[in-house]
Length: 124
Image 1: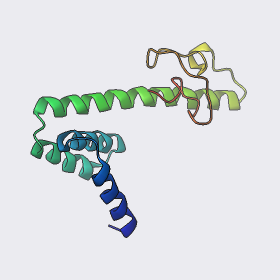
Image 2: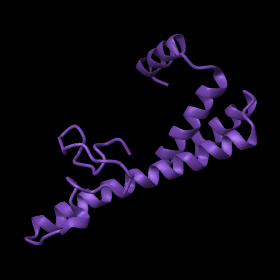
Image 3: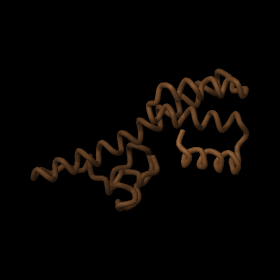
Image 4: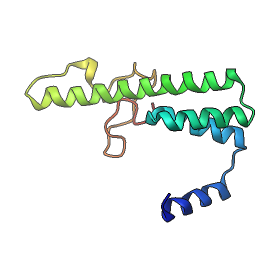
């Protein structure tokens, strides 16, 4: 590990507001989203070591996959809409990121650079 990452890790360890089990469950979820098999294994074992139950781990796994699917759906609609419009087509109302509400069941925020024009304003 390089020195900069070591400093980041030490700083995060010093200010972490979570108990060790919750922190490992968060790292487990982030590892799943990042699709890092070694990190998923490491934080699965870490969560078990810190007392996470099978039910807690299964819930975090399922929740991460569900939220990832929602975000992927939002992103896909935005990209496909852009591709269709860039080639002179009309995406139609189902791909209108300004009015789309069904990917997350919430009203979208206006599209901005910060939200990458996702249907839910990046909050999926």
